[in-house]
Length: 303
Image (tube, rainbow, N blue to C red):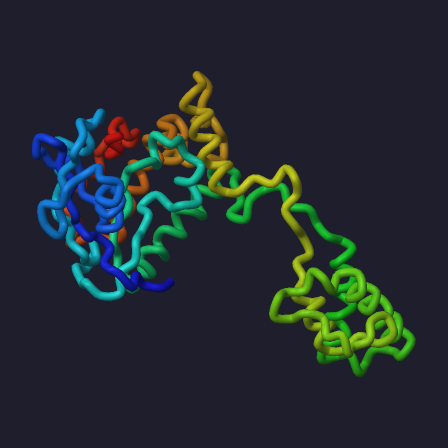
């Protein structure tokens, strides 16, 4: 994971026509208002709108109106920062817009070292969720490519350490199988292992092409593929909209049964509590609240 090359929070201010602070934002967004003559600049990091906005922005929400510190929320260092989704992106991307739109409460700066350390604990929770919700980490709906698998096995045998002990007729048979597979699937080779046009195909595939054939995946996502995150979020949404919940599922532990019953709200709360317990943040932004409402009833949009 790479750290951010620019500061995360520029802490620029947007005021309404009466001088009230609406929200904090970036310099780029200030410039957007200024170039369209929708605001006047009061200082290098503050603008005031020249029109009567419709919404209230983030007025009254102390978390969003404060000066955010450009430092790791766990250890406090200002170095090697990246942004961490408390609710992992693989789940969050499938949630409703009211949960994920215009809400940075659960997006915090972490240094790479603290992020990597916490991700070890986060992965344990993901694996637990995968087991309880019957949601494989690699998703569901894969199609096995048996045609590629036969060629891969032949190529692997030819590249193996015991190839010298294989009878010559069998070696020739393996070369023919592998060569036909190279001819059929060379367009699928990884970008760094493209077919060498100087290599023959069905007659006698070269070591390069045999290696590329071994690198081909033996399965692909089918039309009914569903990711791990989507399976989990769909189950949470279904539970929240139905009188019958997952709580009776025999393979679920008590904690995951409660998550299923509580839907997205309980799931987000569980990840916030997990972050507090295992990351043990010592430099959280002021007003960060694990019990903050999950559904975003406000928006900084002011048009």
